Image 1 (cartoon, one colour):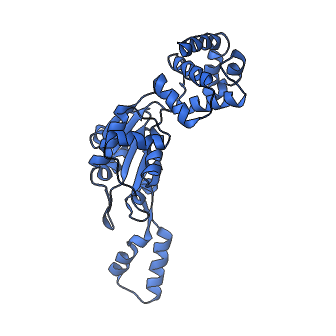
Image 2 (cartoon, rainbow, N blue to C red):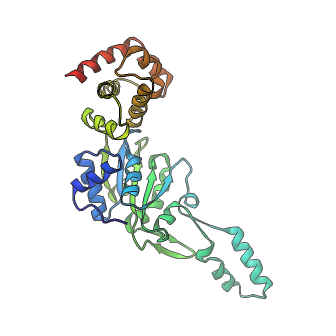
Image 3 (cartoon, rainbow, N blue to C red):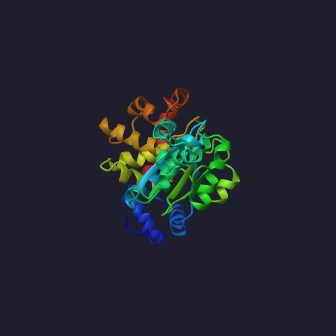
Length: 301
């Protein structure tokens, strides 16, 4: 495991080596989270690169990545730990077969660490495999009561198992929580974290992202794609395209040997950029042609 970046600029360079172009504010917040040993809470629209930050940090530091994907109905047994009841029952039967009659001793024996099945939260505290980056992804998808399970972990990097005691991390993981803000995450979570809103990149940063993630694109095509997408994001669509869609769309156009935006290829590939038929129908045709003209003009300026 390499040393942590000692300046904000070093953090920006580390992220850039992993293909992530961070602005000054984001690089500062990530740097502070690492230096202060605090969890990082990233909130923003889908497709703005929140999850990618955790992946890049894990790859570049390097640390093992432990990911908890949140969903409706997520509970402690899926997120933190679960007792292996089948193995416990077998241990009870073996103890009884060997003549053990002390019920208290049998009970103490079955609530041992070897019978504990680690889920992502507990796995991130383990020293096995070295320090971790713990990604708690899309926390807003989980039920609100689940957030209470996280408070001890975020405050003290530990989990208390009633039958076993408190399990603490020898080396605290770097915790990154993401939210698409489909609901508000409780203040108790926010207070334990450093916070950053991850917005869509401006045109200059999106061009830099394309240069890193899709090298070899024709310069004119890259400039026009970014200007077109920036204008789409200013429209009234159900699901705005994220950075990943910009990259995919640019690569799709390049695969069709496009050197610049033209109405035909644009209309034919809108399914790469937009993910809902109503949005595609609204943009296709005259509206796309208008945005192409504006994108060409802006890219040439």
